[in-house]
Image (cartoon, rainbow, N blue to C red; front, side, top):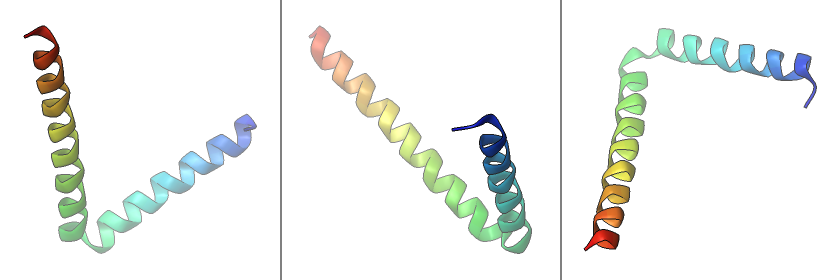
Length: 55
């Protein structure tokens, strides 16, 4: 992907995120909370997997 296209795409995503947070902060916080839960569960599952390998 050309550098200019990548820069424009990143700016569009940033603008969209700011717009979404401004229009619906409650919903945005729910989305962030859901993403955080997925990350935490993935790390816990990976830790459990590594623990299983070591036992």
